[in-house]
Every structure is written in C-alpha cells, then in structure tokens.
Image 1 (cartoon, one colour):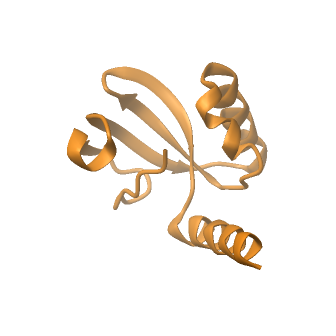
Image 2: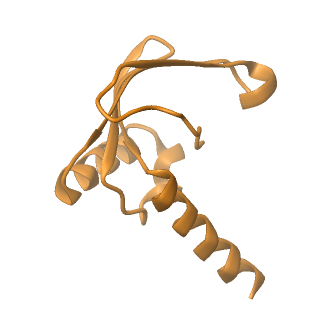
Image 3: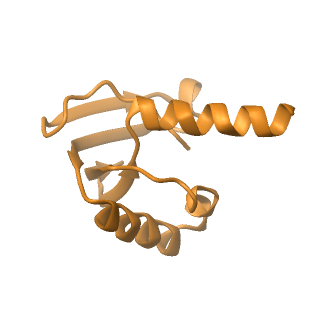
Length: 98
C-alpha cells in the first residue's frame, strides 16, 4: 500500500487515513529522512522479510525512509519522493499498456 504524505523531510508528522479512504484505518506518526541507497535497500529488505505484502516493492529504488509508528507499532519503512514514485508509476503504466 502506498500512502501519499505531504511531509517535510526530518519534521515529525501525523496522518490519519480512515477506513473509507484506505480500506482500513491507518495512523502514521513519524518522520521521513533521506538515507543512502544502501540504507534504503536494508530497510526495504527488512520490510519485505517482516511482511510479504511488501514483496511487490523489491525493485524500487529510493532515497528516503519513514521512521515512526503505524497504528502504534514502531516501524522503519521504505519511502519514495513524489518524483521517485511518479517515475516508477509511469514506467509501470507504459510497460503495462505497451
């Protein structure tokens, strides 16, 4: 699941996404921080190992992680800038549609 968040790098934010919008209620609280490609891959690998729902993201390349909590559980998750997400989305759309 990708959730777009309007957050400034390094600044604590809180986001509530109700069940009607996200399919289930989600409460995010934490920060987005820039990391090396190596750190991003470590966080992504750990996220995939911890929850197979992330397996579809194993090919993403990003430079940010989210550190904080999701529904009260402390997490470190891969995050993408809007530019990174847009490039990935456009590549997937063009691959799927020819």
